Image 1 (cartoon, rainbow, N blue to C red):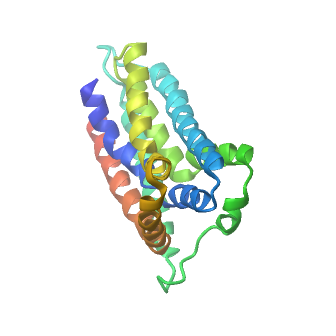
Image 2: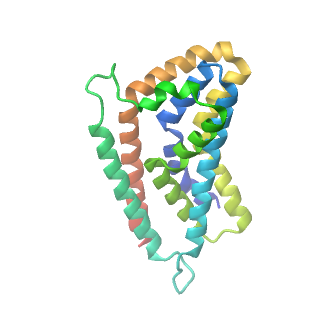
Length: 222
């Protein structure tokens, strides 16, 4: 199981470093919408778990070789996912704003601090499960877990570790605000500004690294 967790680490970090949901939860906290921020976090974690769990089942159902080893189809899946990530990296790099002081961000972020508590749960889930980057990483994580010879308990524990790492960057601002709001606010403001200005570059680099890593692991599994 430890080797599987090791394979999942770069994928989980790729999900964790997602600027938009971090910015969204910080904006909710700045607007004193703590309940909405907590529900957004819950939705984010549920989305990460859902994708990983579904594709863990898919991984279990993938064919095995005659000796019981992982079938080469797992390698092919990783290569396809890696190529898709490289395409997303290229698109993200091209979408960088010419002026870092005027970055391009989703328009809905302007109104995120007014989103209702119920909708914040759905928003968190959607950003975790439907965002192309996170979906591809979740598919890679799930199929990696399912393709290995793990018990149901080990699979659940592995998904839990993956989710905890993937959700850590959205969890951290919420915990910081709940524990020491006055001290956390200046740091959260600085973090939000930096993420807004570097969103596209961060995504491009992450997708590039994960894409190349998946292609390499896929070739090794063929």
